[in-house]
Image 1: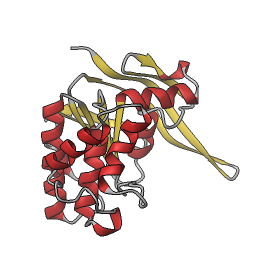
Image 2: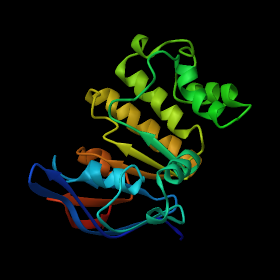
Image 3: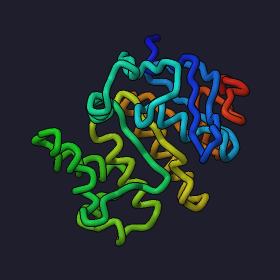
Length: 226
């Protein structure tokens, strides 16, 4: 099986005043194409930082990351943005929908920006798939948290990403709504054959993936199959 993500000897630190805070060190792992993978650990263990580095949203101090067959270290910011636009999907804890756009526009606009003539059709199909066929013209403020996250899921899958990064996708949802969103995420993922990487503190959610990486204090404690 080909590797879609390969991380070697990753280190990341931040400056805080005169101090240097090391957030991640000695990080080594890889993920197969179409694999579902969870990154877990206590708050402050470096989960979100690691996700940002793997997705090319931030740069490491040292180490190598290969994403979708491309070495991120060799790319400038514009090239990394282009790679994300073409091959990567995102789901965030706080939904990140554009408040002035309707549900349909939030899903279709990324496709329209890429020149896809079927943007609206694809957007409608995805919203129907996530159970929002009657919410096309609703703005984010008119939707519940669970509905907003379902719009975000539809948007994440709209460009048929090779890999999808989900950062605490149920973090802002109540337990029952969170479970529904997770089931939907897993179902959409299976259907589209996307590689799924989830950062979560929810061990029940992590157990639904094929492999779990456990972080503590910026280091990997273990990587195990579920």
